[in-house]
Length: 238
Image 1 (tube, rainbow, N blue to C red):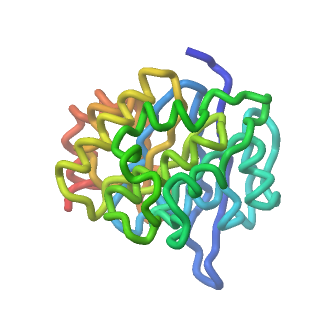
Image 2 (cartoon, rainbow, N blue to C red):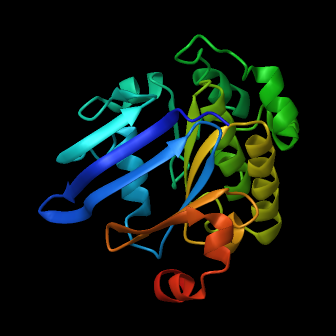
């Protein structure tokens, strides 16, 4: 596995208005790694991903993408640098077809890579093939989640930020998304996965970071977390 970092955050603070949400958050995800960012609802998971993606710019600290400082850059420039962001609310284009949603996002990656073509995305997401002509707004929640991940891959990012991909979905769809993420992991795709559902991540992620009240409180392998009842009880139990 590469030792180069896909993304790294160092000491970032984020405010929404006068309310501070993140307090000196530092984390790093190496290329080829699947890392779960875990925490209860409101712990700061989504804000951490939004900070990295430039949607919620930090007031302090440093964010690097593939070694290049990116704090203060606009979201589209961070995306062009290689960050693929899959937001919690999916944000498909409701009045465009599935295929148009995919084609809108098509571009080469920051190093000119174009692995994720339309044909390859359909091969990876067979559920979308019979839905090519369906409007995005007429898809189920699970279908929209699949489309959003597929659309992000069409931009050939260096890695993915996934915000709560299992939230609010039927168990059968959650299992399909889990299978997809395991496949991407085995392909060497870099993923930072923000999740409240620890059990969803146990067979997907290699590493775990736990956030609580806007601060990182734990870092280790996912296996170490699996066996750490004290951390699970204190920070992850519902």
